[in-house]
Amino acid sequence: MEDKKNYTAIGKYLPMSPSKVRPVANLVRGKDYVEALAILAAVPNKGARLIKKVMVSAGENAKYLNKHLDDDSLVISELKVDDGPRMKRVWPRSHGRRDILLKRMCHITVSVQEKVVK
Image 1: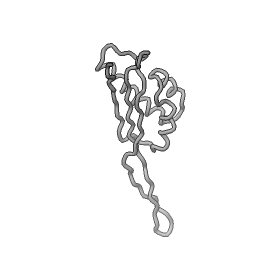
Image 2: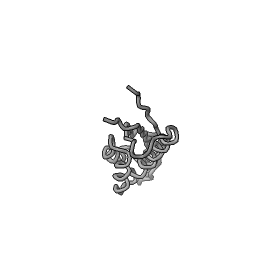
Image 3: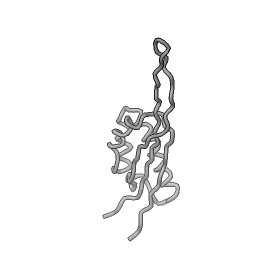
Image 4: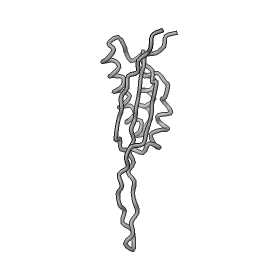
């Protein structure tokens, strides 16, 4: 039995909260590569654009490293959305007080592999 290789792309320090990106990631996790790209093209969220960029990069990595692969033979094997660092900004408030504004970032990891032919 031949072991299938994962081809990975990582998007780091993307300026969006992971809690906003994860529902979009759940839509395409485990789907075919072409079908996942079609779903992400139809979703109007910023998170969909970020995931699509990383997913296209993973697909191109796979096609570059393994010349006999094409888009139809790939499947999304792993899709993770992790917390990144948080930039802290200050909001001035009345009476000399302040509030802290957290600008959240996320890291997106996409792995694709060749489909298992039955």
